[in-house]
Image (cartoon, rainbow, N blue to C red; front, side, top):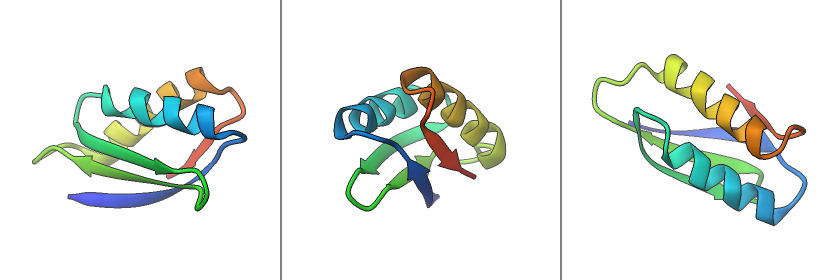
Length: 72
């Protein structure tokens, strides 16, 4: 399953780091961040708990940039 989330991030470099961090989260098949549109697309593994996975994605993204936000 793929879903798109609105994000808030200040620079393209941070957006790229957020994408790389999100891809490492268990339950994520792929992640793509579009800095210009301020959107993140996540493809989840089959049977993954979307809410649990997105809490972890949000957590790792905030480690990259403490001001970054992923709206769940």
